[in-house]
Length: 144
Image (cartoon, rainbow, N blue to C red; front, top):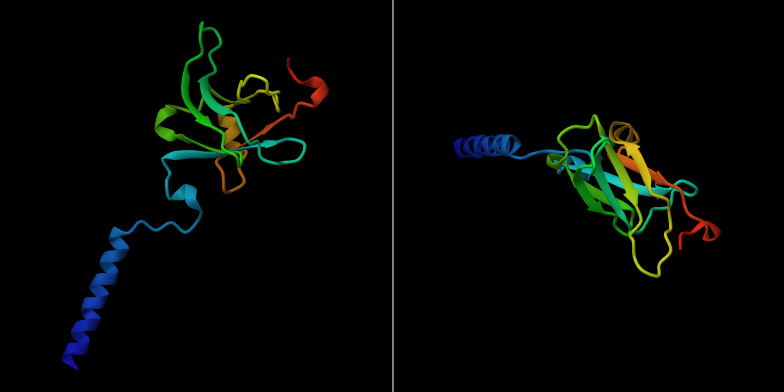
């Protein structure tokens, strides 16, 4: 009987130690890595994900000769991107832009979208920190 109590006590200490040393996250993947802004770029007409391009976070100060780029990420095939939070010093006075890849002989699929970064952080669905919607370019509107 004494051994049974010792094992129970040992088990209690082990489980308590695990609770203090393990980081528990009960929601989605973005909470497992809070060091990133997770986002998705979708078309405004269908909510289908954009499958190419880049996202940049830049200063909103247009008086400078060149706007400072704080972070850049590639848009994946599923429209998702992630940007390290430590590269973005603040959210005020910043803009986020999504733009198509500039590849030869390929028509642009969507218009470049520039949005205030603070407002972009308000457009969330619970899974992503940022959801950017871009306007699809129809064949008759595409750039040469």
